[in-house]
Image (cartoon, one colour):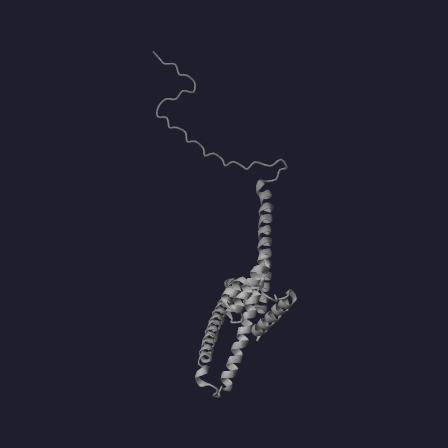
Amino acid sequence: MLLSKKPGTKYGLIQPKQKQAAAPLKPSLSVFGDDEEDDSAPVQKSGVAREVAKQAAKKRIDTKVAAQQAAALAEDPSIFDYDGVYDDLQEQRVQPKQAEKLERKSRYIEGLLDKAKERQREQDVVYERRLAKERQAEDHLFGDKDRFVTAAYKRKLEEDQKWLAEEKLREEIEAREDVVKKGHMGDFYRHLMSNNVAFGTGNDRGSAATAAPEQPLREDKLASAVERYRARKRKAQEG
């Protein structure tokens, strides 16, 4: 029986056909027929031009700033010394405080020295008054004999009397200022009488406690005394 041969059918060793390599795709054309490669070239060129212009402007600015810095340094070499300026500002803040502290300390020491001198002077006056009383108590032993007093001792006695008068005035001024604050003059006169007795100008302590002053100081005279005392005190401080 013979097989019928269909058209296109092959028999025997059949080798597969090799596929042909695909042809490279051509770039798509634009609507206007221009290639994209041609269009990107101006864009790249414009970007490079902008970067070059930017770098040139930055260089000009840096050159200008450097010139200004050089001129500033030529005028003041420490103009960029920020740490030094900060230290100077801190020192300027500290110096007034230190000066004020030293001034307060100086005034305090000066006040202590004045108080010490005042106490010493008071002790000297008390001692001299005690010696004077002792000499008066011994007058009957020497009778009419002459006494020799040196000029230095006489001058010292005069200074003591002057100090006593100033001390008395100071006490009166302080009493008056205290009375002015309290608004009561009775305390002032009692204080004045007690001071007179303490300095030896009154009769005794018993009479000072009960007796009123015979001739109280007038306000205008006391005010004048206060002003004179303050003027002498200011003059002594300035001198």
